[in-house]
Amino acid sequence: MYFTIIASIEAHRIPAQKACLVFGIIGVILILLNITGEIRSRRMVREACKFQKQMEETTKEVQKQVEGSTKEMQKATEEATKALEELQKQIEKSKDKND
Image (cartoon, rainbow, N blue to C red; front, side, top):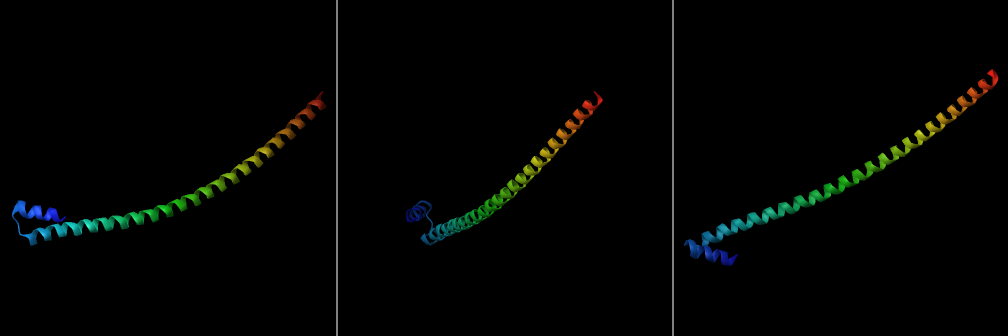
């Protein structure tokens, strides 16, 4: 930074105080930008962690619902199979009676 100020003084023939002031302001702006960027990145990390936890919970809930639905479908399939078997037996009995 020092060499930049000296080079600016010599190349542009400006007073040293003015060059120091300008480069000081530029330095302060860069520092503030760096700090705000760091703060924002930390906020985003926290929000990303919260979002990840929410997604994990949602995934678990969906898996539970799918398991419950699967069990219900299995029960319904078993009941339908039993009903069809009983119907088939009744049809066979009625055929035997008619013969």
